[in-house]
Length: 347
Image 1 (cartoon, helix red, strand yellow):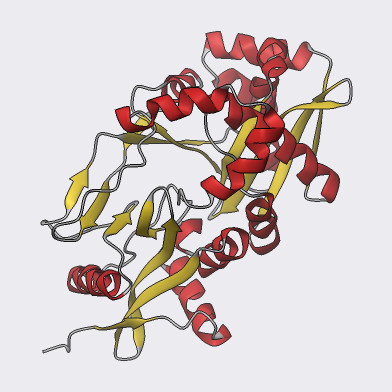
Image 2 (cartoon, rainbow, N blue to C red):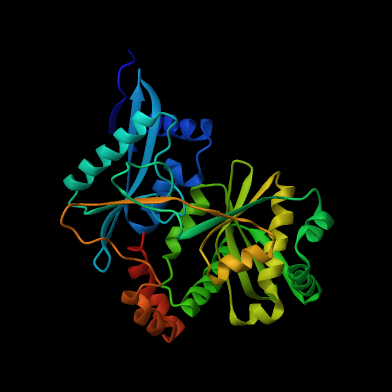
C-alpha cells in the first residue's frame, strides 16, 4: 500500500522550495494565483502574510494550497486561497492529499486565531460551506487575426468597439512609471465611482515586478481615460485590474481597451482571453456576455470555526450597502487617502 501524503507548511523563504512549488503549479496547470510569486507580491504590496501548505508523497509534491493570512480591523481575519485573487484553492490530483491539505488548513487557522478559511476554487471537504451560483468565469479563444477578432464580437458590441476605434483615442502598453501612474489614477477614480476602496499602489507595483504582467492605457487627447493591468499565464491573458473615468463611457474607451488587449495578447502568443469573474446577473456579467463570452459557474468553499460568525465581505449585502453609497460621494483625494488602508484588508 502507498503511504499517505505528508502535509507540512511551506518555507517560502527557501528559494529551492519556492522553485519546486512553481514547477508543480506549472506542471499541473495551476492558475497565476497558485504561484508563490503571487503570494509574495501580495505580501509585499499589502503586508498580508504569504503562507502555504505542501502535501508530499515519497518526497515529491502531490498537493499545494497557497494561502494569504489577511487581517483587517474592519473585516476580521481569514486564510484566503488566494488572497486578492479570483482563483486558488487546493491544487492536487490526489483526492486524499487534497482532503489532508484542507484539514491541516483548519488546524493552522486555529493556531493563528483565524476564524475563517476561503477557497476560491479547487476541492474542499463536504462539511465545508460550498457556493456554486455566486460568480461566473468567462474564458474564450482568441481569433486568428485582428479582423477575425472584431468579426467574432457579437453585432451590438462590435458596433461599440467600432465607435471606439473611430474616436480620438491612442493606446500605449508598458510597465514603466508613466504607465503605472496613469493606471493607478484611472483605476482609483473608477473604483471610487463604484463605491469601493482602492488598493495600495504598492500592490500593483509588486505584481508587475514579480509576475508576467503589463498595463494597457487608452488616452484621449493625452489624458488617460481607461487602463487595465493584465496577467499572462499558461497561454492566456487576464485583464485583472481595469477601469475607466466617467469620460470613458462616452468615448467607448473601455471597448477600445479590451479589443486592443485581445490583439496585443495574440501578438504576444496567447491563445485564450480570460475575462475574469463577475457576480452572476450583475452588470459586468452581462457586459462580458455581450462580448460573446459564455459564463461558467465557479465553485467556492469556506470554513468557519465552530462558534464564530461567518465572514461577510459581500458588497451587495445589507451590511455594506450604506457604506458603498457613502464611499461614492467621497472626494477623490479623500478616497485615495483612506482607500488603501481599508482595501489591504479586503483580501
